[in-house]
Image 1 (cartoon, helix red, strand yellow):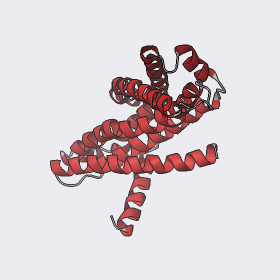
Image 2 (cartoon, one colour):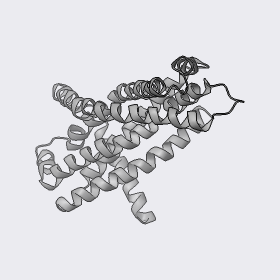
Image 3 (tube, helix red, strand yellow):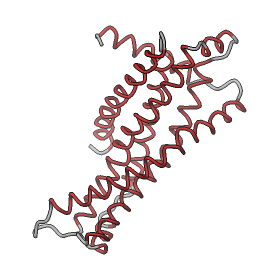
Length: 249
């Protein structure tokens, strides 16, 4: 992508968001679509969040227990370090990278298919703000459900580590639980939740932009879906760096 193309995309995205982020004409229809999208994008993503978080949490504890087996460090360090990793980065950033593939491609392909089958054009002809009607419920539903996914991820990540301690005994369960509770800072949970909601907006809005801007046929829908996942991943990592520096730096 050239510099000119980059700024064209940024400008088109900004203009699209200007159309999207307006008050819906029919609130009843909006809330109907909102709850449908919340189930489709949020509730249907719980299973992948639970499974991945459980196993990643188990692996994190296992790796830390193996790599800091030093007599200079108390064994509860395993629980404390695992908790920090899960709360600070995994449950927000890494899970959002995974969701960028699942949810982002879903949004992009759905809206892209509607674009190439001229359903979007039909809405515009009828005088409907198609951008607001199609995209706004997806953004609001996914962003508002992100805290639920993050909390599930945090719990299952820590629970996965707990199960590893039961099966391996390294460290012991009591030591792990003590480490989880040691030096706990409540603000880390709120930090992760706010950050995940920001990432949720990026995933849903950028994916919707690529789908809404599709031109061509089915092949172009697939290409737009792939591009949305790539751009979302880059934006999430860049935003994570800036947000962390601003909040925790």
